[in-house]
Length: 120
Image 1 (spheres, helix red, strand yellow):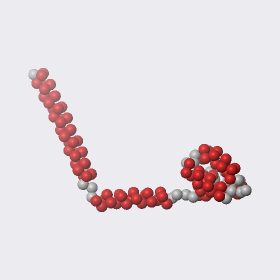
Image 2 (cartoon, rainbow, N blue to C red):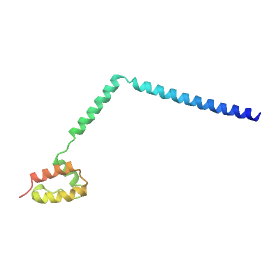
Image 3 (tube, rainbow, N blue to C red):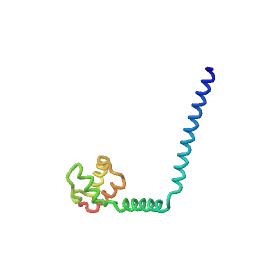
Image 4 (cartoon, rainbow, N blue to C red):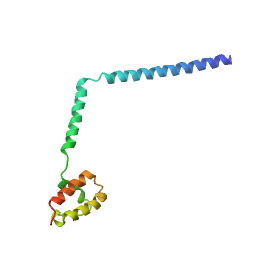
């Protein structure tokens, strides 16, 4: 009698696990089918949104003067480009790029701006 009770318990657990597994499989299958049947208009709108985001990042490219005003004013008053020579600005930018944590591209733009208007 004890073995029969154990067998019934084991079968109940096995059927429960099988039912739960089948339910999870069916739910995931429904989800996959719904994802594949995405309407074309929704896909097109997503592509347009991505293109707009790319254009915005391209348009927001800051000039050397803008980057200089943004980054250098964080720690000290803005200096005029004519206050230093080209070589002095180069030396200063080597040190300040590290301190201000500027990416190379931005540092080059700031350097170009400062050297264009540098004093003699």
